[in-house]
Image (cartoon, helix red, strand yellow):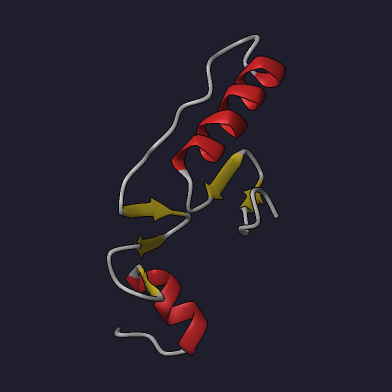
Length: 82
């Protein structure tokens, strides 16, 4: 909890997804991560209401909206379109 609100950090190998209702909190987190880990190359960021992350489309314009790419959909459901 940061400033009384949930801060979510998801990690997968070398990818992170950071979210918080206050943009300043995310900026501060990114600044700290860059300071600590960007000695060889800067951390790249993607911002917006619709994001692609690990084969998913996450749409923050819609409540609880995550769409999986077809290959991942097939793995989740066990169904193939072939």
